[in-house]
Amino acid sequence: MTMETSMTGPAVRLTGVQKRFGDQAVLHGIDLDVAPNEFVSLLGPSGCGKTTLLRIIAGFEQVSAGRVEVAGVDVTGMPPHKRPTNLVFQRGALFPHMTVAENIGYSLKLRGWPKGRIAARVEELLALVRLEGLGGRGSTQLSGGQIQRAALARALAPQPTVLLLDEPLSALDLKLRQHMQLELRALQRQLAATFIYVTHDQTEALVMSDRIAIMDAGRLVQVGTPREIYTRPASVFASDFIGETNLVPGTVMEVHDGLVTLTAGRVTRLRGRADSPIAVGAAATLSVRPEAIRLTRSDASMDTVPPVDGCRGQVRQVVYLGSRVRVEVVTEDGITTWTDLREDEADGLSADDWVSLHWNPEAASIWAGETIRTEA
Image (cartoon, rainbow, N blue to C red; front, top):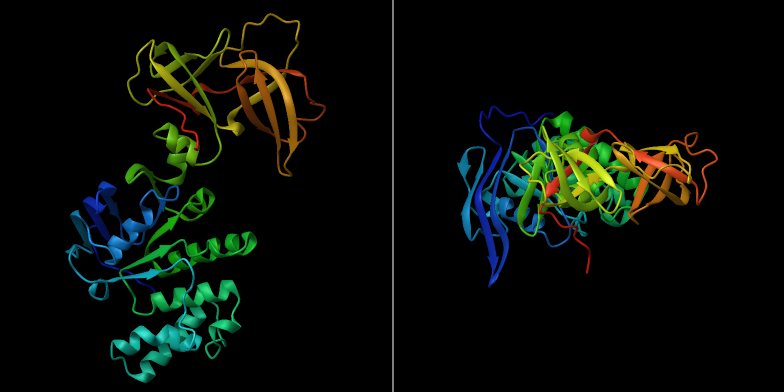
């Protein structure tokens, strides 16, 4: 079974979508195209508007302004049951008085399908989500993962053009959630279906998505592939929200062919790439991932001139994390930096050792006028 489509345009197109609840604006002119057969994750912190946007696509919320199209049809004012979409909620929310098979076939029964056709479709879906032989069970007889798979089968039953998923794995424990991430991604590829998935879990978005749309305070901050967003974030927020990074504020000292030298204290000079224009003397922030930083042993008695593309400092702590060792270094200017090493690279390293930190400037990003957000 596949959900292949002959669409030539976007499966979903959002144009200038705004949403207000009373005096509070929660979405500010969202523009987004989702291609047929694409897995797109809406990623952002709690309260950023991602679930509201999903509910607008589903028709459970109406836009305050803007336009929603599904498969080239304007569905902006269309009720949910008339849209070629279906929604999987955060918790499976199966009907407790129905069996698994009855839950899956319920929407088909409402559509007037004959019993034989419903039964065949239900068996097909039970096999698809690996629940064969469990159609006669009630929801209380299922595990958390089985409930979510049954809810997924129920949503897939009428073959929606677009499947919308609102954090469907968030209630599962870590190992089951990781397993279900891979299962769900494999299922989406098998079906050749269009999935729009809401999550606040950055790892989940990286693992599952063709593209990620990062949201913050009701706005799209960046849309791109997982690799694009991780390696070339568009802002301090995107850099800090996706993965782990070191953020260092400073002042632009030099700009040459997009490579920027930042001064961040008395002796610290750091380099990275700016993808937008930046002026000498501007306040700026550098982001560099822990795994991009290389560490070499140093000597406290050596000249304090920093490395060409890095800085010197003292080890504060060495933390064993199984697959890697994380080292905290405090630079000569008091900047705290984390780097990730292999176990053999960290062998013999201990607190108070002097080290030099350096990286390829192309692996670091710099933005002018950006500030580092801290949680209240």
